[in-house]
Amino acid sequence: MRHVLTNALGVKEPDVHVSERELLDGEILLLCTDGVHNVVDTDTLATLLSADGDLQAICDSVVAAALERGSRDNVTALIVQYAEGNGHA
Image (cartoon, rainbow, N blue to C red):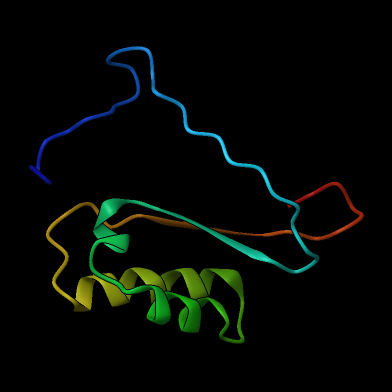
């Protein structure tokens, strides 16, 4: 049943899942579709996200890893880095 769509924006009232935790300065968040997290294991993602380089290059490497592993779903990734004290992410 992995192929069955269970939640979608704009179709019905969304089922929102909320989780809170404090972010540390420099911490990176990855928001991605099933096409990434269903094919790239957690250890590989951690390695990719800890690489030196600009955020765009890191994001590109996450997408490339999913495509190299033959993802058959939408492959979308967004990376945000938290910067303490400036009110911006």
